[in-house]
Length: 121
Image (tube, rainbow, N blue to C red; front, side):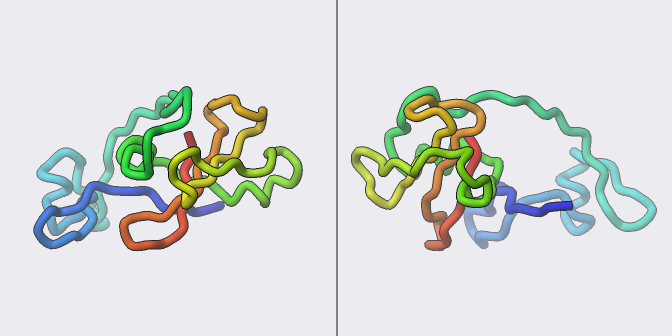
């Protein structure tokens, strides 16, 4: 099994991630409390491209994309060399097919804490 970060909404006052826990009544009963003190939530998975062209900036990427990705280098030659964003050199974009924004496009950028993250398109 592999793990990667998932971005949860943050509490605007405290800054904590807001995901279902027993402490918050399983996200105000959005999910179902289980006997083992965990929350069971219904989910829907959809594969949709976040961007079909270069996004405006890092904030747009961070507010649109929510699924983490592995470093493109781990895929060997499957990905073309990263392309620097046209107006923000801190963003690198990796395509499988040069210039094509697809589900497998990966964005490398910094999150709100300055940590390098990779997000799947």
